[in-house]
Length: 134
Image (cartoon, rainbow, N blue to C red):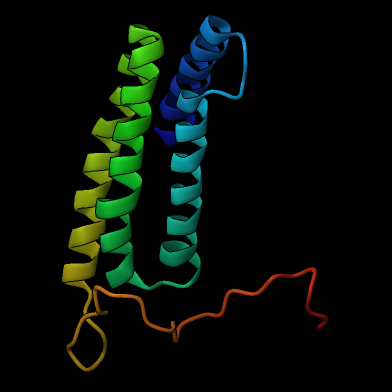
């Protein structure tokens, strides 16, 4: 779903905004880039570091609101672009529910759940490959 539906919606709505404004550097595109940044940070927390508690907070307070703000900015430039980008919120809200239930249904071995605040991860360590040598 993500690759076949969300990607083209993002691309087409962004093309509408760039065509309307005549530039890539405008508040709507910058808000979308901010949303993509929030999503990338969330992906690292959830998929690489596996800090599921913080992942719940990140998706609810970072990814979904940034997508809603980007859709609002797109709508201000071109209503169709805003509606298309806003449609991706349907999936993001569904994903938020799935992430929350994954956290709720999968406690640690001792029965506790990962905290809903940032802590140092124990399952993996994120490193910058170009700075270290192995």
